Amino acid sequence: MQSMYQELVPHQKNPFSWNQIWNAEYDKTGSTAFHSYYKNMYLRDANYKKFGFNKFYTLDSKPAITHQDRTDNSPYVNDAASYQNIIDQLNTEEHPQFLQLVTMQNHMTYDNWYFNNQFNQANVTENLNDYERGQINTYAKGVSITDQATIDFLNQLNAMDKPITVIFYGDHLPSSYQTAAEDKNNTLALHQTDYFIWSNQASASAGVKLDASATAYTSPNYFMEMAAEHMNAKVSPYLAFLTQARTDIPSFERLVLGAGGFTTDTSTTYLDRNGNTVKRKNLSKQAKNTLNDYELIQYDMTAGKGYLTGTDFFKMKQTTGSHSTNVHRVQHKSNTE
Image 1 (tube, rainbow, N blue to C red):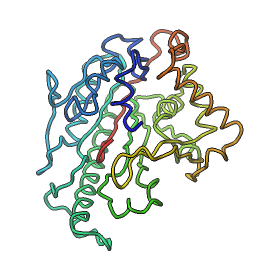
Image 2: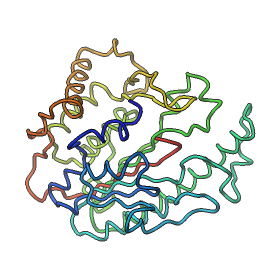
Image 3: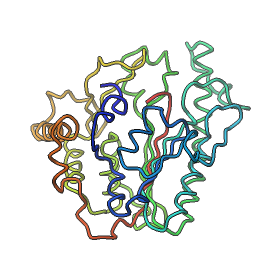
Image 4: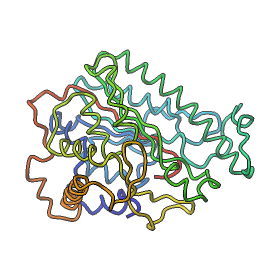
């Protein structure tokens, strides 16, 4: 399966997603999604409705996403504008919210959009043709703009008198690295991106950092579990299972993007906590048992009968009103999903 948003979710009746925790507490105003592009990309419009987001703001939604500023000649909404939409939404409700933002500033293609790009002189990498070099230089400039916009965004969140936790991550490096992608030894590196989980000063978890040795390498399926640990929050049985899974299998993912684009000729890649690849057959007995349990859970959630939805497996073990934190999830796009 290459794209779950296109091949899986459209066929699910009631798919589980993390924003539903906030919906259960605050009903329709519990979660809102933003994407600084068009709503039909990867069928997000239909899928987000299934996930239970109350509203989904895009360039072509009604009403459209409010802030749409671009930088220089870039065709995409810049990150500063995308972040401002989140700031505005945080100010619309007094109660905690789950906010999902998928940015577009650093998406392909990279056609020399920016004025005064210092990376045009700084990039002295050998064996690149002019097109590839130009693409990489534009991408690098965009990332540097993201760095400053993100600092400004976090400073604004720090000034707000309400607890806010941010989960920030990217999906993979862009396909502009054509020369690097020709070497299969670079496949893993081209799918690795930075991430962080951070809380503002109004949060009880401000300044908290998880054990670096256990979080240097991870995969997106663990982000909400890691955020719960970061916030010292009460958890559901599903989150508790993910805690055990991350202990046994620190990171795993199918690397579906190769030099020629999407491919199904891939198998799951497993990493230990030091980032070393581990073959499935070499996983510990405990890890294999956990992986088997995980596969059974995934089967029930996707192709099975959905027995878990009739249990408390996804429900939070807590009293009413204890969702005391706004969670903002930022997914930064680079190239394609």
